[in-house]
Each structure stands twice: as C-alpha cells, then as structure tokens.
Length: 157
Length: 325
Image 1 (cartoon, rainbow over the protein chains, first blue to last red):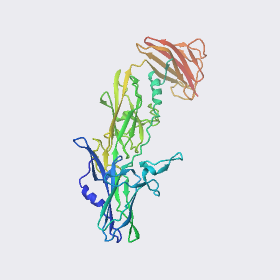
Image 2: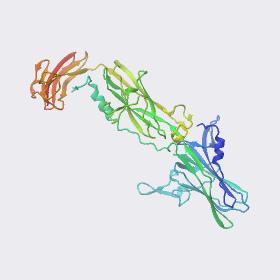
Image 3: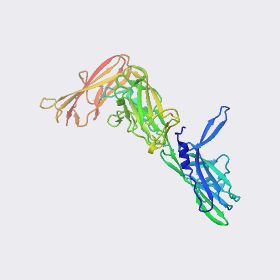
Image 4: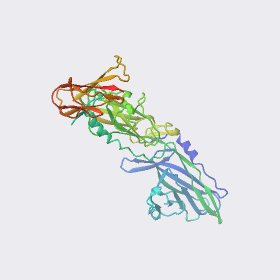
C-alpha cells in the first residue's frame, strides 16, 4: 500500500489533544496502520504508519497516550474505548498492557472469561470478533508530570 | 433417439449442451462482508479518574479513518467441460460468472476473444434469467462500451459470450476478461480519490482484473433443418389472413459422415392455426395422420415423422399444411 505525499500534515490534524477541564489530564488518540514487511534476513518487520486510509483486511493500531499535566496525582484512571463497528478486535498492541474486554459494554474481563449468546440460543465462549469495548484500569496513581500509553490492535472488516 | 428440432438452422448438439449449462447456474457466490468503501471509522475513548477524591471524566480526541475502496474482481467460466458447437450456429452463448469481490460499487470493462481475436461488444450479453443459454428475447446486450453495469460489493452478474457463427470447424478457446473500471495494476496500486464517495481506491490481490476461458469444439452439423413456408389466401394472394392455408416445408439435410439412429422430426403446429388433416407428406408421398404402420402422424399438436437410421448424406423433405383460424 502506498500513501500520498503530505501525510504528515494529515497526521497532525488527526492527533489534536483533548483538554481535561482543570485537572491537567490530557489524552491523545492516534490511529496507525500496521505494515508488515520481510527483512533480508527473513524476519518479519512490523512498522506503524499513520492511517488516513485503510482497506478491508488491514491491521490498525489505536493508541491512547495520556499525561498528567496537573500538580496533583490522578487516581483510579480508567480508559474506555468502544470499538468502532467496522473493526474486529485482535488484541493488545505490541508493548501495551492487555485491556479488559467486553462483549456487551457492561461486563469486562479477560476474553476467555466472557460468553456470548449464539444464534441457537445457547451460550458460547466469546471470540475476539465478539468484542465491543476495551478498557484499561490503571492500578497505581499517576503522579504529576508522568505519562503512559496503551494501545490495541484491530482488523478492518 | 435423437430428435431433430425445427424452426432453426440448428443442430442436434444444442439440446444436450443446454441442459448441462442449466444445471450449473445455481452456483451463485455469497455476498462478501467487507467494510464498505467510503465509510468513515470514528474512534473516541473516554477516561474516568479521580483527583483528591473527586471523580471526573474526559473524552479523547476523535480519530477518523476513511475506508478505501479495494478493487477486486473474479470471473469464472460456468461449466468446465469443452463446449460443443456446430458451425453456422448463430446464437450459442457461453456462460461466465462475474463477481465484484471488492468493497465498493464498481463497473467492469469486458473483453472477449476467440482464438486470440477480439470479439465486438455486441457478442456480450447479460444472462438475465441465469439459465446459461442465450435467449434474445430475455437476455440484454452489454452496452456498446463493452462495460458491465455497476455491481454492488459482492454482487454477481452472469454473462454470455456468443460464439461467432463464422467460426470454422475445429478446436478453439473462448476467453473473457473483466477489468475494474476504476483501474487495474499490481496489488497496492493507488487511485487517489477515485473510490466510492471520493475515497482512495487501491488495487486488491486480484490486480482488479480477471480472465476465464472455455474451450470449445466446432463441428460440422450432423443434420440441419431448414423450414420455409408458403401462404395461399382464399383470394389467391399470399396474405396471411383468416382462412389462408400455410404450406410448411421442412428440409432435413445430413452431412457426409453423420450417423443418426432412430432420428425423428417433430414440429408443433403454430398457435392460431389448425392442422389440415391428411396434408402430411414425405418426399411427396402421403403419410396418414394416425399412429399406424407408416412413418408419420399428427398427435393433435405436432406432426411427427420417423426418419429412421441415417448413415449417409441424405436430404428428406417433409411438408404439411395448416389453416389460419
């Protein structure tokens, strides 16, 4: 896949930062397309490039980068990302802690613990394609001035 | 028994091949569930947190990604075996199935060749009733540009390529190519802004082009039937008015090495006419209408003449008369 020239400016427009009211917490949501290429030594190299356009089957990574810009520590930080319906969840992105996932937006847990009702009326083990929400609960307080990142991988249906 | 059909300069092979094609046309592809081209994917996250025991929440920025159009096409010959055709056959269609396997609405340019020679767009038809056989009253011609109508993602179109009547006896290959109207190229080739809703279009794994081939064998017709008619009105003119008599002449010609067993000629009396009893003749000799010792009969709707076994060049002429009601 090739990208048109001028993507850097497009990316800048995509990564506007949402201000938190008075708290100093900011979060930046960015989407990347995953490019797999085979290196000369035979290993597979994965590169992330800004995704302004994706096509079915493409792997994308959504990254949430957060920063406590205030003077107070932030506690109980929870990041919740409802999955756009055009995407199928694949898993945490490389280097990110695994999120809790949900198939109904209500109950969260590891995928293996979730069940979905099948067309036959019975309950079945949930699969990655059933995931509708992902959530990270940051266990420790986020000290003033510190940052963190979480990310998940999905495939365009 | 082989039946010789009338009303065409047609051949015996037709009925057999037609039956084979009909049984195949149920194989329609299921629709593909790809993200639609041009759709916008919006993603926003929410954050809940507490400072000094006070809860608050914020939303992230919105990120928007546009789904590009993948250009992909598949084309299959319907029926894998060799098509048998008779020389001079003017309306023999070979069926193909075109599938828009991309995720956008797309029209496809169609090119047919026979033995490497391009055929005009006028030889391409949409097999509207998907029966695998050409019917000029039902099937619609492809427009003069040689392009299909726009197909929705996953949609299929059954096509017919008419083998030229001038095809010489022998073996050949009929080839059909379909190319995405937006463009073709190596997978990944980009057509910026040319996809649905102004999205970018990207060539998919198929290269946005597909070709399918059907081998065929053209043989001299074993037998041909030429039908002609003569009208005589009560006033002596040839006007086809009520009360006029039509004399039908069926000339059956078999070729040099034809081997027909228990051949039978059948012709249905046209609607709006009445068979004239006792008018059936073969080579000038009368045949009775009853189902008896002679080779001809009228069964109430058709005349039937048994021609028997034929293993040498033969010409037989059958005549009968009807009256216009």
